[in-house]
Amino acid sequence: MDVECLNEKYPQSSLRSTTNTATYMEFVLVAYGSNLGYVQGAKYQIIKLTQTVKYIPAICVVTDKPLLFQNYPCRVLALNPEKINDWSLGGYDHFGIKRQGLLWATKTTTGSKVLLLDTDMYWIKDPTELGNRITRSSAVLYQNEGSIIGAKNLSLRRFQEGLLGKAL
Image 1 (tube, helix red, strand yellow):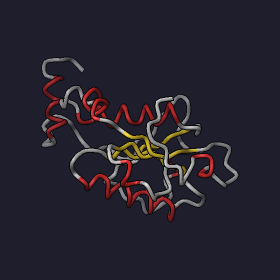
Image 2 (cartoon, helix red, strand yellow):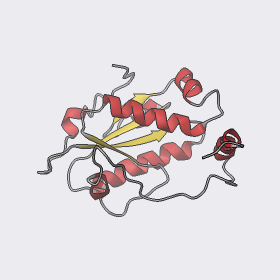
Image 3 (cartoon, rainbow, N blue to C red):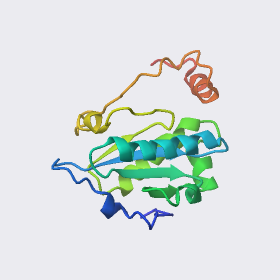
Image 4 (cartoon, rainbow, N blue to C red):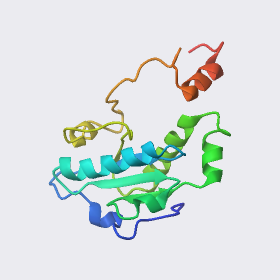
């Protein structure tokens, strides 16, 4: 298994749901890079989840700063510079890291479902209900963040450049 760092203080088996639901869900956060706002957002999400859901939530953080999550109730997958470079296609696809991080968390979870949470989202209600809508033949998108065509985000512009002249 390709797990480089596991938060020993909070082993995943102790984070299983204590509700009577048949499925077990793990919430996944991806926080990396020089902007510590992503780390702070992930930490806030962890705290908020522990206060919002009606059971002990299983949480996985994919990060290049595993020590910053050392005392948080989560499983940590540590990114290294090689993974960041490979997954971002040499820095051209910022969102490749999020996609590959989610895939890594999905492959290493003991849960039957995973729910990716953005570090800049702040839940005011339990997101478990949203996750319960996930089936083998469906996914759930909470909010459409808009068109990638004409976006100001550099990563989206790079993505748009890659799509230039291609039929969608």
